Structure formats: C-alpha cells, structure tokens
Length: 352
Image (cartoon, rainbow, N blue to C red; front, side, top):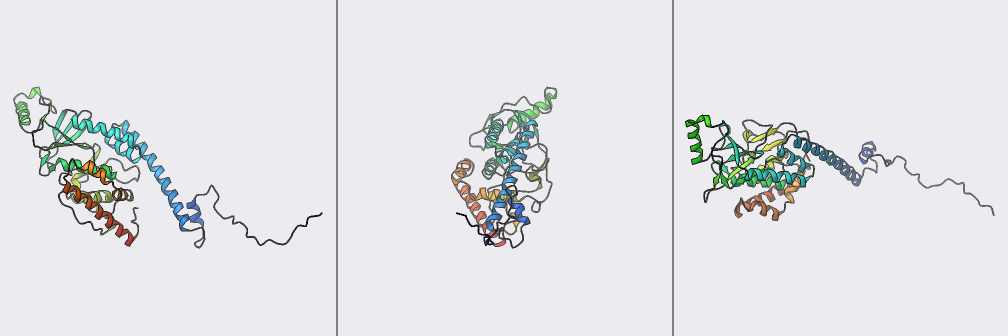
C-alpha cells in the first residue's frame, strides 16, 4: 500500500525566530524589542531587573571582599569590619569586631593626648592595646556615653556601617580627676622623667560608685572632618540623615561627620563616618518626608522596616530606659510609614 503525502500548505504558525537565544540576556532582548512587542510583559521586565540586581550584588560583594583584604594588609581593622559586612562575610566581621571591642574595653591605656579644642572637655585620643580610641567622659554636657553606645548598636541593627565600634570602660582613665592633676604636676617638677605621650599613672582606677562609665570609640585614621556648617544639602547623605532622625540626633554638622580617604567601593561615592552622638535620644523630630533626600537607600529602609523588636530590646536595654526605647521604636514605625506613603504618591526614589 502506497502512503499518500499531503502537499497542501500548512496553516500552523511558524515559530518566531526573533525570540532571544539562550545566550542572550533578558535585558538585551528588552532593549531590542519593538515598543509594542508582546515580549515586553511585566513578568519579563521583572525578570530582567532581577538579573541586573543579582549581577550588581555579585560585583559589589567582590569589590567589598577586595576592600576587606586591602584593609587587613593595612591593619585598618575598622574598615575591614565594614567591608566584610558589605561583602556578606558576617562571621569574619564579627571576629574582628570582637577583638576591637575587647581592646577598647579592657586593654590598659598606654598613650594619651588631648584632642583638638572645641571637643567635649576631657576628651582624649588614647592607645589601648593595638587600637586607638577617642575616650570621652561618661557624663556631662554634651557627653553621654550611653547615647554614644546606643547609637553604635543601632548602626549595627541597620547595617549602616557608619558609626565606629563604641564601648564603655568600667575603669576611669588616669588623666581624669586627681590622677590627671598629679600627672600634670609631676611633668612640671621632673619633666626629664616623662615622655611627651606617656605617664607613670597609666594604671586605671575603678569607676566611682554611681558614676556613668566613659565611652571609648574606635579612632578612624585616614579620614577628615567635612568642615564647619550644616550638612543638610551634602550629597549622598540619605542614610545618615535617616539615622539621625531615627535616634533624635540634633547635633549633626561638618565637625562630627568624617569623610574617609577613598570612595565607597560598592558605589564609588564618598564614604562618610558618623561620630559624636552624645546628644542623641533627647528629642525626636517629626516623621514627615518632604523630599527624596530624606529617604534612605532601599537596603537601609528594608532593614528598618523589618527590624526585630526582640533584638532591638536586647541590644538597647543596657543603655536606654524603657521610655526612650519606646520612643525610638515609634519613631522607626512613623518614618517607615511616611516613606511608604511618599513612595506610593511619588513613585520610587531615584536612588532606589
């Protein structure tokens, strides 16, 4: 039996050979497709954006790993901690952070010198072990060591990577009070016995009962103050502006904002370092959002929005009373709500 072959033209639609090949990226197909092409569906656009974000994250993580290794070679432990966090190496970052914390808290002061005029009275640059720190009195205007440490811990919760490691010392430094007076006297009487940056009264004394411990903040080298004046219109400060509103900090100016040497490896923008939080947690401004410069990066916003209340209470309770913790938490909720309303009305900010 001979099989007949149907030679009539088929009506089946041919496969569109213009579809992106497996080795073409989704973003490339989007840019090359006609405006009315059915391939430009919301799902395809979302897939392309996901690919682009993943690639950007991959690149920035590798850049941060390289920055961490560079900081390790240069023995810049604070920069290494921040770079490892940005690279997602949280275990390694925690190990370095714990070493800094231990030395700032427990190592004896081996060197000391007063800081530039205009700072909190009694503030000194000290060497404790292999780390240098800015040692401030625990209490007294405008110092408040509990506020200094609470600001640092909120930086950890947000992943801001802008506030250096800050601790409280349970022993008082020799240069404060009676020992400091003795030291100055002996320098005058027998100057040949002393080096410019050392003292025979290096052993710390126990903190008097009822007194607030001093704060010791890791000194950041290779950084300069931004200068005098307001920081309101300084570019790329969105995250720190949000942070200051969260902690109720009215004292952000060019003198307590540092600009690190070299840009941030993930963005190429200036790397800012926030210091001097002794006046924070005293009053909280309104949570309205008037322009996108008050909106933090998307990553910081999401960390603030999904912050763990349990972890917040555990980390902040040693330094802030219940009333203050409640105010900070409400300020966080109000800021998140205000940002969501702004985005719903105006669309995504240009820096998201």
